[in-house]
Structures are given as C-alpha cells and as structure tokens.
Image (cartoon, rainbow, N blue to C red; front, side, top):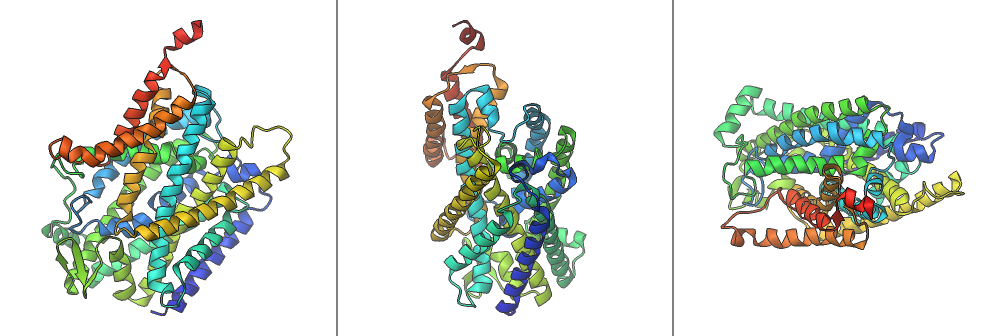
Length: 505
C-alpha cells in the first residue's frame, strides 16, 4: 500500500478535526477551555470518553496480549480480569466521587484536597496528577506515533522526531482555543472511527477464515486463547489481584484524574454525569472484549500464514511480531488496502483522544492548581488566556521529551508499562482522597504530606522488586496501586489527629 496515500488520509482526517475545532471554539472563553461552560451533553461525553479510555494502547496493545506472552504479562483473555475490576471502580466513581465533586462545585477536583486538608495537600495532589497524566499520555502517544512511523513515514524518509513534532503541533492547533468545549465533540468523532476500525477488522478476518462468531470462539477456545481467569496466587495475573487492581486503577485513573473528571463535571447535572459514567463503563467492557476477540483472531490468522511461537517470540518471516507489532503487521501487510486504510484511520482516531484531553487537562490543572489562575483578583480574561497558552505550549514541549524517552526504552508492550507506572504515580492520589473521604481526622498540612506521598511509591518499588524472594514466589501485580495507596494512607494517619482534639487546641 502506498505510504503517500495513507499519509494523505492522515492529513485529511486532521483537516476534519480542525474544522470541528473551528466551529466549536468560536466565542470560547477560559471557562469553555477548562469546563466547557458546564453545558456538555452527557451522551456525547460518555461516548467520547470511550475513545479517551481506550486510546491507541487498547487499539494496538490489548490484541497483542492474547498470545503466549512473557511470564510477567497477560496471556489469553486474562486482561479481561482487569476490565471486570474497572466496572466495580466505575460504580464507586458514579456514586461516591461524582456527587462529591458536584456538591463542592469544583473546577479542579484537587480543590477538594484544599478544602479538606489545606494547600500543601492540594498542591501535592495536583502535582501527582500532572506527573501521572504526563507519563501515561505520552506513553500512549508514543505507541501510535511509532506505528505510523514504522508503517508509513519510514518509507517516506521522514525521521521519527519530525513525525512526533508534527503530530504534537496538530494536537496543539485544534485544542489551543476551545479546550474541553472542543474535545467533547472531537472525541465523539474519533471514538466513532476507532470503533469502526475495530468492527471492520473483526468482520473481515472472521470472513477470511470462514468463521461465524460461535465458530471463532470455539476455535479460540481450542487454542487456549479464551481463558479469562488465572488461578495461580503467585502469578502477576492472578484473578483476585487483577480484579481488585482493576477496580482501584479505574478509581484512580478515572475518578481521581482531572482529564477524565474535567469532562464529567462539564455535564449539567450530577444525575447526567452518573448516567455518563455507568453507560460508558458498560460499553467499555463490551469494546475491550471485542479487542481481545480480535487479538485471538489475529494470532490464528498469522498461524495460518506460517508464523509460529519460538520461546517468548512470535516469529513471522524471522521478525518477532508479538505484542504491539501484531495488529499493525497484519493490517498493513495482509489485509486489503481498504481495510488497511480503515485501520490507519482507527489508529489515529485512537491517538488523538488520549493526547488532546491530556494536554488540555494538564494545562487546566497547572493553571488552576499550581498557578492559582482562577483565584487571583485583578487578572483580566486576556491575561489569563495568555498564561494558559504559554502553559499549553510548555506541556507540548514536555510531551515531546517524554516521547523521545519512550522511543529510547522501546518496550514491546506499552500497556504493561502504563499500568505499572499508574501503580506508582496514582497511589498517593488514592491515599489522599481515601483519607479525606473515609476519615474525619484533621491532617497537619505541610511538607510532611509531600514527603509521605514521595516515600510511599519508593517503598512500593522496593517491595515489588523483592516480593518473589521475600514472599515465597509471590509476584506483585496491579495490587501495587492499592499497596501504594495504603502506605500513603498510613503515613497520613501519623500526620493527623482527631478532629475534636484539633478543634479544642
């Protein structure tokens, strides 16, 4: 397939996004950028959040987990254990966190920490969000940029760094003015194209292999690909660890994440926001199952083409395509041109929602939480806008640096990196919010809070690295996030006192 033709579709898609951005950002204000003037339609937000949550990582990486992966990763359908946990986490978000955010009328969800504890806790929470979202978003962005580079732009002689700069400039252009107001609509458009790419690829491969849905599931079952539950307690993918870990990952990466909640609190009422979360979670479960189904079909398709397992590798003509390389390899080399074009459109549709929302949310959090832009009196709308644009540009540069770091790391499964990093960076946020919601104790707000939130991830890293030796072969998986949150909670407890005692002093 012509690289120039595919590149033309990428440019055409971007022009479409610019058109949407132009019409949605007219007469936009700072409130439009930060919270969409609290007038977003909940159905559009729910549908668009699917694209944000899935991103290019799900589109490319989840299908690759189905094959016989390395022992410390997923295999078969065991990733679905985490997805089951997500549903439990979304229930907590809908009926505990969402009402809290609306009750306090928050623009930044980290304002809760200031109201509950004080400014040090507030700044610490915002700082960990900025760190978490920067790392997570750039990892997702790197994955898709790398696929576009390998399958389109290398053939055109375009260096990776140029590809990354151009794509970041594209994202910057259509988020610069409208922010959340624009993203609600562009994410809806992009989710539609991403799901179209998924469904078309499944239907084509099933047709090519002469499978009905039932026959496909039976064939995958015979290969051992449909196993969902891992019953080995020492395994990183043990079902209880993954379900519990998935629940807390959803709470932390959605409910305590300014990017995701920024869209939810842009909805008119708390009831609509709850409907958004619950409908979104159900659709997300179905879509993740379809990605796993696609993964099994892709491995079987390539086995029929002569590929085979060799240790931890899945070799096709001497090239290892296990993990993140599987889906792009099949789509670009073995499927008809029309399906390959749909794959590319689906891929870039998965790219933009994970990056545009992150860039907007990071700008919002830094302006509101770290710079206190909404608090300062005497600053005009024009001055606020200038500050916001400088911050927006600065985060674009930071994104570029992080993408180059991930290029240097060059791991075969980005999804494992993202979920592992989430355990370290979101843990302190989980501990802070849990301590505020579950206790009535008065926290001695100060630098000690920041120290506790830094020490907890360090302790978790040491425990995780040595768990197999110290705990008789037990490997810490996604329960790392819960452990991190618990250590943070414990540290905050020692920095606190009973509220009644504090009031009598």
